[in-house]
View 1: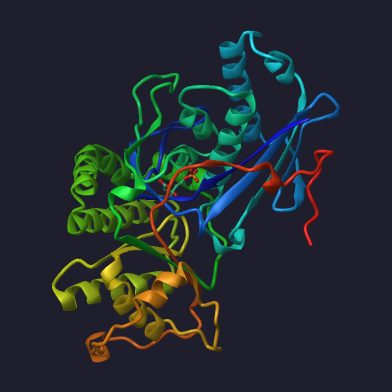
View 2: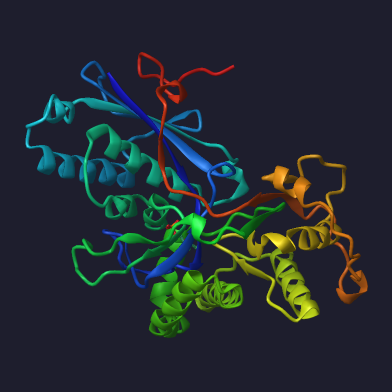
Length: 395
Ligand code: PMV
């Protein structure tokens, strides 16, 4: 049996992908830009084993066996094997033979899927990266990750990433590339505000399809995006927080406006999401400076960007306006060690500046994180599969 174990990160788009030009190949209607988040806080882990003794392909996700017949998983496996066959042509060790062996896949997230965070991007990026390691294939794999979930192609790189929509019909030029590594902007930080009431919402595949079919606004959005994409790329290269945060907020608002312009309309934001937006604008207005930027995916959770120096001040406000009803030591998670170091914020915020009441118990928790690197291969002692290729039971 041969087995590899890898980890991959979550990414958050600052120029959103919303709409496909090809449903089967998962080709986007527009290019998108994202920030890869640090794996210390949010990561998927996947082990893939191949053996001549396995009877069939099998997959376990977060401890539960799932059907391997999911068309997206099948596409990913098929594409990887096609690439491996092309590259190997039977010349190295048992590589060609290994391609005929059945595989076992075991994957888990280090964060609750119920949190409504983009787990499929990390999951598919991790699967594709692990298969690449297993079959030792070279070259771009983002176009293969894209076949699992569009946004997964951006999780194949760390730092700041651009997914080019591409021009070709076969999608070979619709790939993701790194704009800058995560080390480029060392004081950029991220707060994820996980909203308590997760209403059942329209999945992104279905949602973007209906928006494509019915929204006039989306057509205008797609026309105007190349300019914005260029500007935010430059802002990232220049570490220009104001431009970066403004474009991020406007793009999120525009994507959600397109969702409302969809017929029938789709609304992902809740009252809590809208209150978070209000708080950010109020805070920025008070300081007469763009200090915080927000973005929302296909759900109510907020992803906030800010600089390290402003985190304590802003968190203080978040805790005041979105307090947990019971004392909760785990309310703030993630890189709390850094928060301890920077605890000394002496200036008291004038809360009367913010014209609203606290919303008790409206956040489940907050994750404090930052940009991070791309997928990694992990040592074999971290394998999720045992010697028989079955999920390892952990106490
Ligand atoms: O890759 P999908 O199908 O999960 O779509 C992702 C859509 C958004 O998260 C809303 C935007 C994006 O670019 O990540």
